[in-house]
Image (cartoon, rainbow, N blue to C red; front, side, top):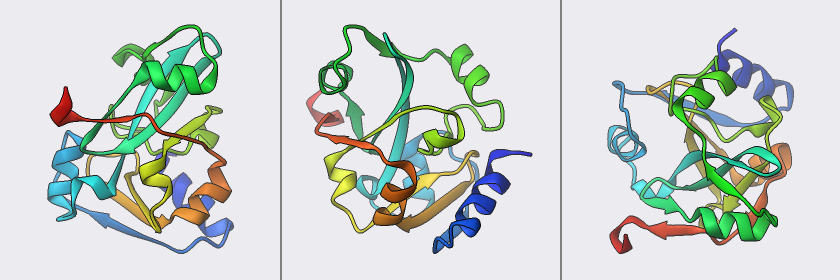
Length: 159
């Protein structure tokens, strides 16, 4: 079973209200936001890292970057780097490369969410493909995923 039907089943089983939309394939988070006709800052982007405690997911607005050093500091890691494409294919065989949803619970991975996402009423994210987006209440997401919250997003403009 691919990721999207599993996610639908999980959300339905937990009685979560959500919406699902599809668009033409879009490869980057900024392109997804554009295809969905939504501000990039309202779309959550999932970045996978590897640290001395294993893999994890960091979630930031689509128009921001992850400050890996700050993620490492927040989580108490002595080593952190981005996961490679090969690692992503192995970790998420049921997802298209780069379209992982921020549900670490499906893959036994911890999730850290930037405070900008955490303070929103809703969260929108790619759902395993470059064409599918799920929108749901952030409170429901928080209750299901139990992420760590921190300030680690960096504006792409500053880089």
